[in-house]
Length: 125
Image (cartoon, rainbow, N blue to C red; front, side, top):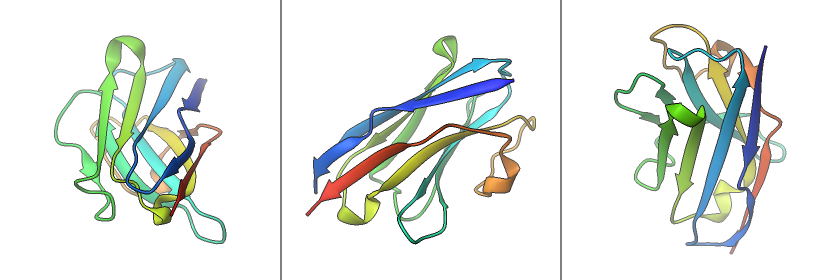
């Protein structure tokens, strides 16, 4: 079993920055992909970013490209999401997720096997 715990959410003004963390524990796999998704009130969950544990080019949604950066520390089993130039429309609960499929990197939530509990990000105008 895998546990994912997000942290780092909070309230920030538009134009500000936050860094989210997601620590994975339990039976983790070095070849897994980690993703970030978000869900705003009344909206469907949407993909934000993903990164393979083995490296390679990260994957971003167009809405965050150039503002958000995903990274990982394999030694700590932790993935990060640095969010800069935040906008009110970035307000959502942010979830990290783990995909056990070797080599996979996907924007589809159904491809991911484990999910964290979420952390709230609120951007005020």
